[in-house]
Image 1: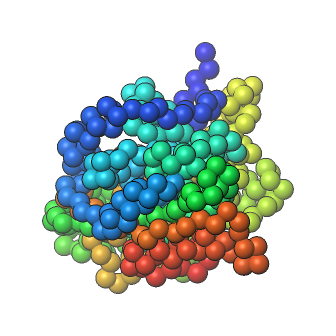
Image 2: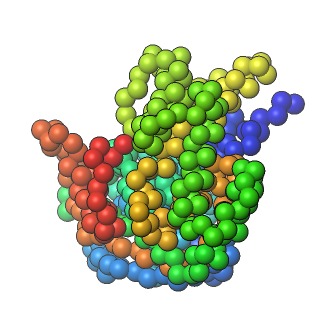
Image 3: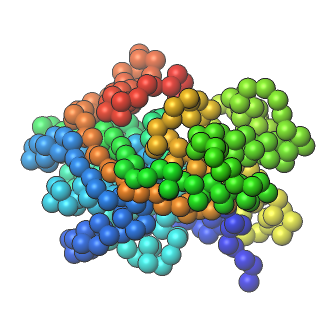
Length: 409
């Protein structure tokens, strides 16, 4: 039998044919998961404390009987499971739209995720079943629905990338459906900013990880050098190694231009081969468009081993390009916060092939819940951008306390 296991380092795509996984209504399993959640978050993600800001806003929408869509940012892999803390605080189960690859991690996850309210979405294609399920959940207002509009884990709590327009589409579709059943019924969106704060010994937590990375680079650990300097130096080395791989030599110039040039070197030839040279959209969208084109014949299982290996190499290149995108050149600055230092080191570990970076803690998680945004079933097409998505973004930016990046690319 042909081995259909993705190569090491590939985590979000699969050769297995996608089958929609619907949510299953259960009160027992969300309750049971809540019992073990604090210990799991502490051991697996370093989250030891948490608080809620604006919980009364959600409670008001629940009491009013509105269909509720919660839209959080997505800075860490722990975000979806951390929502169990919100479930306990609200005494209200929720539904979560979750990437299909999460349901393929293990038999336990495949069985458990639907029972705690999750349902799958296939991000490499149009998933009509998932969209229909999301719209029905909102229109019927049985449970709040959570959608991570950034579409990927960014590992940057101080940065918000472009939000997926599908969020507004499903909200407006649900608003139309709800209005047909009851003209007084509302669909509302609550933006939710997840903010993590490190409350431990930074030097003690990061030094062993940096020692390992530097040793892997055939360096002597840089004892006596500040954490900031060590992290910047490693970043330069990793970038140069990727440039050697894709250009044949390390490049010169400013870091932003080098990163942009490297991403184009990886994505450009693939776009020319697969999608007629279309380079429109953010890096995340460009990667998504290419996966849509490359994956179907892999899933069909009709390629010979040479072509199969070639396509997996192309998919790996897409993974690398997306990793580069999550290394914003100005993120470290002159005086980076402990959280930015940790996030950058975690991305280094992922870039070096470790899908489960070292856990750093204790972390404190704050759920900032924004005001309800009432969804109008129709969009003002005269506006240069979607007004609803603009409202969601502005609310998240404000709650995170960050400056928005021009273009959100």
